[in-house]
Image (tube, rainbow, N blue to C red):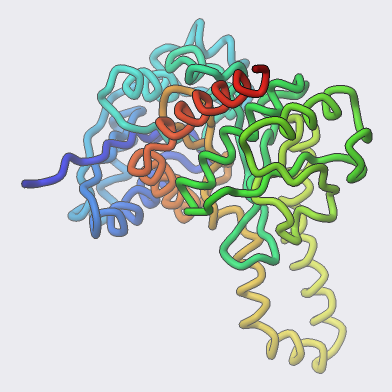
Length: 349
């Protein structure tokens, strides 16, 4: 009996290099996913452009369909404007297909705010979630265990309860996707003492301490890359600054190495000898390796990518969407909130 295919709705017009990068990413992902489960890509966007791009590649291993959507959401569009005036856009139609059950997941390298707002409105929130969140991954010194930062920009201001919810969702995600049992949760702060930080952070500490998660207390910025915690909880203002800063590190290091190599033949030779380990380090720092970032807390599997996403990044975004569906991340998050609620009630009695 043939397994039912996982259907991923792909915003074919979302990225800066759409639809070429989207199509190349889908073809690459299909070659990987087809080894263990059937996959169907639903390209959503301007049909003529999509078909023209598809004609440039070998699509023999790609099972796909196309849904025409004449409007395109730009990076300058306000999220509310997309919901009100661009309902025939690839972004809106893709999330709508997911909500209606025609797709199991939605992937977009388009306008992050518009994806979040539209997904929250159309898909709704998982019971127990007040604020959906987006996460980002940081490499750590612990091999194979990146740190998940929540929130990475969805919620600029967060109440104590929201920070607690981020931790619950992050724990469920890391357990299901990375197979980490009882993942460590750290609350990002300016010091380890429980009384440090803003009022919201101090109150969040108390909620996390009394909850069912593996809360290890406050951690500082220097702890993140050392892998002290599997999930790092913070408000979206702080998390987005961390994300943007991290994105600049690799380009800065490459520029420094080029400058060093240019100083002399000896320096150039030294860099050449270190090429293999440097390549391995840069690979871990490359956002493409993690693809996109998950939108957690909505009733659906939504992966959001950078506007400049390469085919490799889009491939990994699709792979992430497939794993989110296969490993029932949303079901796990829902059950986690039920367990958290039960734990809270027991602690009151």
